[in-house]
Image (cartoon, rainbow, N blue to C red):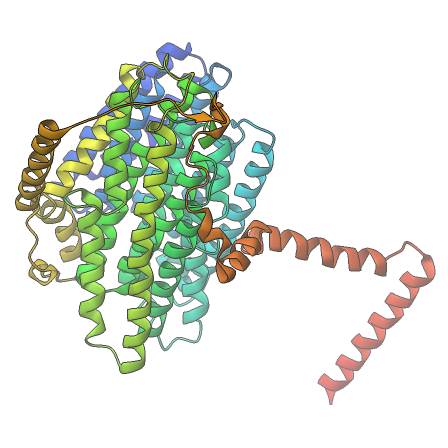
Length: 606
C-alpha cells in the first residue's frame, strides 16, 4: 500500500457520512457496510507494508498504530452488522451519518503524525460521544450528554497543555509526534506527563474520570455504547498511554507505580459498584471501567510481559464487552427493559443470545481457556517479575496492587453470575413468547464470541506472535514469552471437556428432576416474589466499612463531575454575594484594586 493511501482512512468514512445525509436509510446502511469492509481489508494490508509515512508528513503508521487501526475496523464493521436492524427509527438517519464520521475521527487520531492534527481528531472523537449521547432515551439522557461533554472536553484542555509542554523543548517546526520526548530531569516532566494522563483516564474511563461511562451506558443507544465507551475509546486511550510510556517520556519508577495504583483502584472500585447495580446496562458500564484498570496496570508498568498483556487485554476487552453489550441489546429490544427485575427466564426463548453472552461473561471473568484469562495472566506474571527488581518498600506496594487486581477478578466473576442469572436464567412468567434476536444481531455477537474462544485457545500463536510481539519489537521492548509460565489452553480445554462429559454421564444416569410450583400461604406466589438477581450480594452492601463507602458513592462523593459542579456553584455563590449590584461596592473594589496595584509596584521598584 502506498503511504499516500493512508488518507483513504480519513476521506472515505467522512465522505460516506456526508453522502448518507442524502441517501435513504437502507442505502446508507449498505454504503457504510461496503466502505468499512473495504477499509478493513486495507487495514489488514497495511500491516505488511510498514512503516508508512505520507509525503506531506502529516499522516503515518507504525506497527502500534496499524495494530490498533485493524481492531478499530474489525469492531466498527461487526457492530455495524448488529446495527443494521434494531436501531430506533427516529435516530436511524443521524446514527448512520455519525457512525462512519466517528470512524474517520478515530482513524485520524491513530494516523496523525503532527501534534496539532492529533489534538483536533482526538477532540472530534470526543465530540462524537456527545452527539451519540443526545440520541439517548430516558429522563436523564440530556444530563448524561452534558456530563460526557464536560469531562471529555475538559480533559482535552489538559491534553493540549501536556503537548505544549512537550513541544516547548523543541522548535515549533518539529511538532511531530515522533520528535516529542522529555527526560525525567526536566522541571516540566511531571506536569506534562500527568496532564496527558488525565486525557488518557477520561477517554478510556479510568478512575477518577470514569463516572460518565456508566451514565452513558444506561441512557445512550446500546449500539453506540458498544461502539465507543466499550471499544474505540478504550483503543484510543490506551494507544496514547502506550505512546507516553515508550516515546514521549523516559518514565520514572514512581510514575509507573502511580499508574499501577490508579489501575488497581479502578479495578476494585468499579467492580464493587458494578456488583450492586439493579440495571444491566449500568452493571456493564461499571465493569467496563473496572477492566480499564488492568490495561493501566499492564501498559503503565513498562514491564515487557505486562505491557504485552495490557495491549492484549485492551483488545480482548473490546471484543467481549462489545459482545456483552450487544447481547443485552438483543434482549432489551425483545423485552423493552434493561432492569434486572423485568428480565430473567429468557435463555429458553433466546438460546443463541444466551450462549454468546455466556462466552463473553466467561471471558471477562478470566475463566480459562477464554481470552480474558490469558491477558490477565500475562499482566500478573509481568508485574510479579517486575517486583523482583524493586526496592523492599516498592515490592510491598506492588504486591498490594496485585492482590487488589486479583480480588477484583474474583468479584468480576461474581458480578457476571448475577448478570447471567438476572437476565437469562430463573423463571419469569410472561417471557414464554420471547423469540431469538434477528440473524444480524446474533451473527455479530457470535463473531465476537468466536474471537473470545480463538484468542484464548491460540493466544500465543495468533494475537501475540503475529500482532503484539512485533509491536513491542518495533518499540524496542524485548518480551520473553517463556517468563509467562506453562499454560496449555488446548490441554486445559480437553481436561474441562472430560470433566464435563463425566458429569453429564452421571447426571443422565442418576437424574431425578421434579418441577414444583411455589406457594406462599397456600396461594401461588406472585411474580414480585421471584428471585430476580437484583438482591444478589446485598449483604456486601450492609457490611460496616463497605456500607460507608457505598453510601458515599451513592451520594456521588467519588464523582468528579458532581464534586466539580458543587464547587463551581459554591464559589459562584460567593462571587454573587460579593457583587450585589450596588455602586458603592463596585467603587470600593476599584479603590482596593488600585491600592493593591500600587503596593505591588512599590515593592517591585524597591
